Length: 264
Image 1 (cartoon, rainbow, N blue to C red):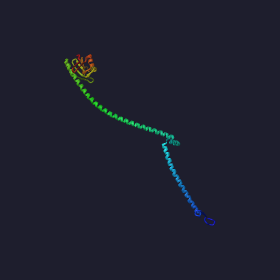
Image 2 (cartoon, one colour):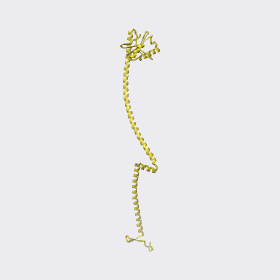
Image 3 (cartoon, rainbow, N blue to C red):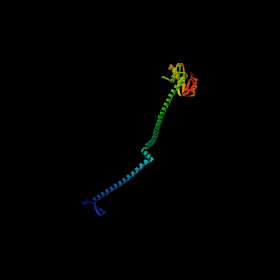
């Protein structure tokens, strides 16, 4: 208040009038609020622009880290992680190679399984062939057995007939003992006939015949006689059999007649 008790006043050049101090304070307050608001708006704009710039910078930084190996190592070196990254890259490369090798192993395994499958199929075909072969072999064995039995029976008939022609009446039959079997056997008086029958015979049949005679001498001497006539009946006597039989006095004959005459 003035000494006169009236409020202070000032001259307003704009309105060409006078206004009080209170009026001035109000206007100053409004001006300060307006300045503060403008500052806040300006700061907000700067913050928005900075945020956009920061996002772009971050994106570029991440792209460089992803695409630029040298930049990545530089950043890692700055952070003290370059050696770790190099080792991780080395481990990653090793893992990649391991996966490649694993894939090759899988491919080889598939090839092996294919080959095993083919082998199994081939084995199946082989077993079929073996079974068929076994059937054929069994048939051949039965045929040979029948033929052998026929030859042995034929041999006994022919030998018995020839002995009868020579004046010896004896029954010719097989001799079967626990340790030895003889195809042709017959005995009468002091004469004993011991022999073997074959479809096709070589000189080895004489060795077999001699072994059987020696066995009879040891285990069953009562089957033998003072005179022993060894005989080989063969539908097809080979030359070596004929030559040896002539040297050793073995009677060799077939259905059509004597090949080597008997020494009785």
